[in-house]
Length: 400
Ligand SMILES: *Cc1c(COP(=O)(O)O)cnc(C)c1O
Image (cartoon, rainbow, N blue to C red; front, side):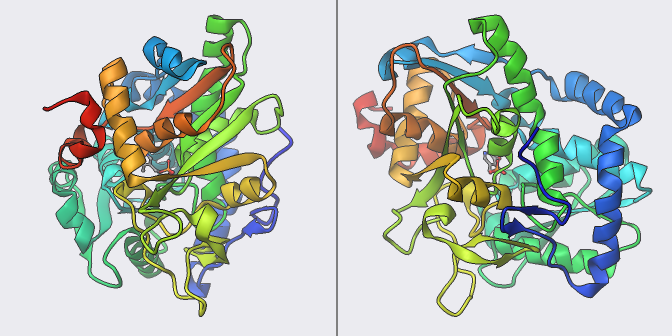
């Protein structure tokens, strides 16, 4: 593979490891350890076995006939919503906890926004009998109560974070602070392709199973191992990174990502970092950041708690800037509509995050035989209330 992180942890001018002195050793230890661990036969065997028997992989690649007819293309859905715990997040937490064990760590910490990464982390901690502490903004603790209960039931301790806007960005800062206090025994399981090097590369590699499976599944279904388009939603960028990983160098494949515009990119209520951000440092990496003129990080706004982040993984900042990725901004209303559309057309209720990717279809022009692969990053059970309280967006589907 040609495209990759450089030895200092940069994707073009984005990435790197901007951490406080006290974490320097932790981060350099991890930088030296992660590739040998991931490439070892031992790790691969255990990881692949858990992905198969515990997560339920490979996730199906489903030909969505009715949606294909609607959009005049050949649409295939990569069903990450069918994984254990309901999203792609578990691919990454299974891998990172194995890595933590191999490095002799005994305590796990993680940040979470919507709670999906918190649940996926608490799940693998229960599985591996590890101590688990989750940092979550106090606002999100209230908004995402069911996921908090799930984490507690799994045995995790949930810390409500009351600094800043009390959302994901503040939870990340608090997790980093905790890591500073316990660098010896603690492994920080980062939930997306963000944070200091090597995290963006670790998470992309853990999620790359998505595109690895796509190659075999496409070969079997259409007789070639690549699609014309790949589509995914992007918050920090992990399901998107996994979806494109093995196709980045393949120029035959067009990449389209959907970021959350909230009320719109020309308002203050948005989470569309690639459209609205500028260069800065966020949570240990140089990337695009939504910030004020004097460098204060702005609060992100979107209906989708999983995309509610004022930064973006450095790999996507780079690929978007180089034009390798086309990035569309999808508003709350467009995502709600698309969520209903997939539900009524295919009988699949997508996570509101994934609905942003579905909404991208409407903004694109296809030829009839274009093969389009769209990753459904998670299932929408957690979002039913949000969908129902916004049903006016989908009034063509009648009263319900
Ligand atoms: C967390 C989450 C996302 C956003 O995270 P990425 O790292 O950008 O993939 C998207 N979809 C679902 C279902 C999620 O839980």
